[in-house]
Length: 374
Ligand code: UDP
Image (cartoon, rainbow, N blue to C red; front, side, top):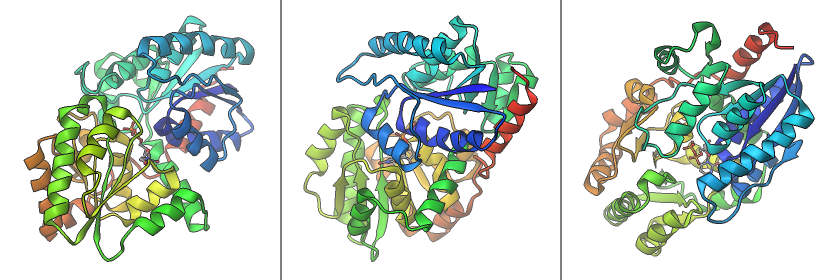
């Protein structure tokens, strides 16, 4: 079976990497990779770490590019690749502009689409923007839906997707995490890892922060930064480490409000192995990231999510994640509870990970072998 994996951003690359490696081990598949490079630098770090050399690189990132311009360039760029590769199946991941536009281009060419991490929904088209619509479009176009949880599969069933085209697999991010950790344990080194090892103060409780969502640009990020500043000033035995996303909407408030606050280490976004190390060293994590919510429970780290809605309710039900929104006082209060209420901390850190056990890729591959597309 000729299979083309397409992705464009860091989280997609992380979650597709273990699938790529396992597909390549199976002679049933002829695997090709096309990256759109929607986010150039952050994508390349992941490709290097997971030793993936794309067969096609559309190199589409441009400064201040509108979503419409990007969409148009993906549609035309990927068409050329389809004509050359003639895949039996195109696999896309999750909820990016790359996922939805590649799925649409495949549909126009009569090529079957597999959607990894299918079925996540908020059913609020503006939150998260544009991810919710991207995943709904991709879901409508996909032929095979690999849902991370039974909740995600249930959403697809409600949307009248046939049950035989849905498989609950767990999330491939756990497969990636296990692969990543085994590389770290085998003495993998890189500049970012060396840097974060120097930054972490092992005598303190480390709070790790990340954030990048458009829905939090403006007031959301301002409030988060104010909360971090309050915590850093009052809680002197914590260290706050914040790899700051490169988007100017994130950089501006963060540098302005947190630029010279003691106990706060602002660092550039770090590559995946360094981030894994930071998660391992952290006491808990404050983030709006989807992937981090899925990874952290496998490392026993509680997560406070700075959003009002979520397409990942399983983590809240399991007790590993608390949705805290973007109100300064609420964020500070939730952090203080985790820092000072041992019972609450233990409950969150010991809850089981609802996103799987690292066997997602194996399940996807077994399903594809049985679904004879050739
Ligand atoms: N991550 C990383 N470096 C960082 C922050 C996050 O490698 O500085 C990883 C993290 O481990 C997770 C992924 O990037 O696997 C999440 O990406 P992001 O938060 O950008 O997107 P989302 O998951 O929300 O789509």
